[in-house]
Length: 117
Image 1 (spheres, rainbow, N blue to C red):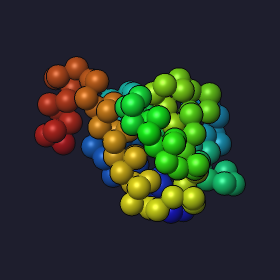
Image 2 (cartoon, rainbow, N blue to C red):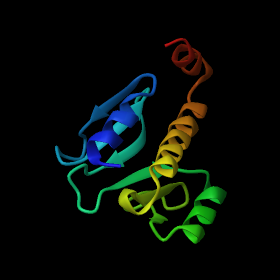
Image 3 (spheres, rainbow, N blue to C red):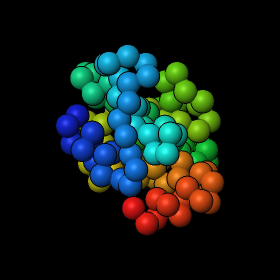
Image 4 (cartoon, helix red, strand yellow):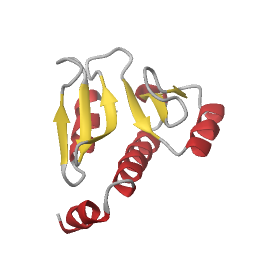
């Protein structure tokens, strides 16, 4: 997966925006104002920080050397994923899981609005 594909995939989800609160080199993808993915899209190697269930995060890190505790993030809930070292399907699943986790934590009224979008 290349940077433009990662960006396009993140933007496919309902109500997602790309913002740059940490500088123009770092893309932050948010749903309803909450971050679910963070990446320096011009980074080499391309990495993305993604939210993850804590138990699954530990399992993924044990199974994949390309998945490590989230850089500059709460390491219990965030992973840093080196994109090129994993199959695209797995990267997409991890992004979708991150989005779903963030949406699940939103107030019910916001979740219902997202379901209708």
